[in-house]
Image (cartoon, rainbow, N blue to C red):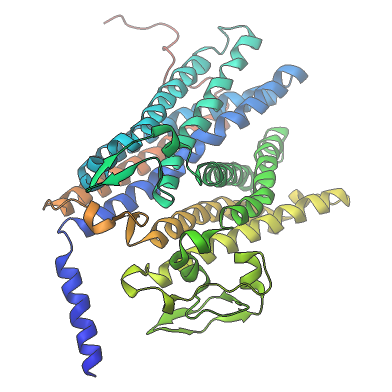
Length: 466
């Protein structure tokens, strides 16, 4: 009893010692990143899908494909404009909420942030040219405007993800007498995890956009719209989603290959390993309470195989790691399992579709499959959010692993709860605005309006000069 009281007092003292701004800063970043990451997915994957449709339209003289490309580009412009707002909010939050990180390591992280900003402007410029160029540029030159958009989306994503990868595997600097010296920005940007972590996020973006777009047209088919427009609008993003869903487990496995050596506490939380076992089982479900796991389903050997590529290599247990270095175990475990579970389900679904198609069965004629496709987009979004929760929460209590603790990076300013409240209102307003605008565009397209004004094009027809 006395030990329990002492433990609770120690935890209370630890909470009392935390900076006043730590909790609201965490909530603010969780909201901003969780909201912005979905828009970022469209900035990464949408241009490539539009490019495929536009090329098909040119080569086959396919008016349906060209019409879809033009519509999707206008949807992309709306999402891009909203993403610009949330991205700007994030850029201010990094310095405002985490001065201990940016003030100390700004020279290390400045290069990828600079390239990300440049990529953003390049994508915006060529998106504007592409929208304006319909009917004004030669077809072969017009379609080429999508190439720098696609490349800029990839480069910008790499730059942002490389910063997060650096936080998981910091390199490119030395600390002497508490000062950051010998900064190597290129080494920091191309750290040991940058390429694999980028590939994981890049593929996830195609899953989110592919399944979300396919789901929109699946809903249309459920409502009786079975024309060429809906079938092509479904199949193109579904092909992208298929490739992404099948490759993603491989990339994820490679990314987590040496997690036990890099971040043993995170791996132990993923696997809910309370003790070191050889071989380690795969635990599905369960919760960790008072040093024990309750309610989990154990599959022998599979934990060692998936985490260590061995039937006997153990996963280091949480009991071997100091409690002050434990992440929030149950959140990390369930976020990881949610990501893996949804990813597995989506991969099985696309395999089923193409196997049935190979056997001569069209699942697009099955309402149960269309209903699943309508849910696949939200499921992919949930998987991405869960993956980022697993990555970020699992790294705690470090913001830069084994170098800078989160509590030491956070601001000590007061009044951040008001900032969080304002951000909630802003993001809610942008969400409502995006839904209203996109629904309005969809209704007008269904009504037969082919040439909606785009955000970057001048108005046509007679105008009052005043």
